[in-house]
Amino acid sequence: MVKITAQVEGMHCGMCEAHVNDVVRRAFPVKKVSSSHARGETVIIAEQCIDDERLRKAIGDAGYKVTSIIHDACEERGSIFSFLHRKAKER
Image (tube, rainbow, N blue to C red; front, side):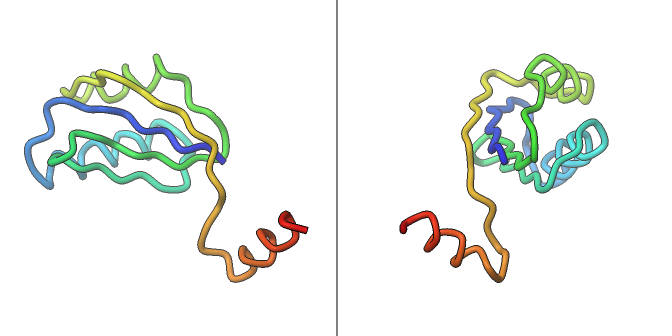
């Protein structure tokens, strides 16, 4: 799993957030995407890395500007058994 945080300029309201989220969902196979106009960012959780240039283009074509992208590994949450996986890793 990978967490991708993109700094996005041009979002001014909740509709802008929804628009960016829809663009990302249509362009890439993501597990989760959420945007915040107040923070100026879009956070994407995906199984595999997303190409930075494709992400910039998809969001840019929608009228917004990606100024930076950060990739981080992340642990899947929300599974009923996720705490067991953590315990097993600790042993």
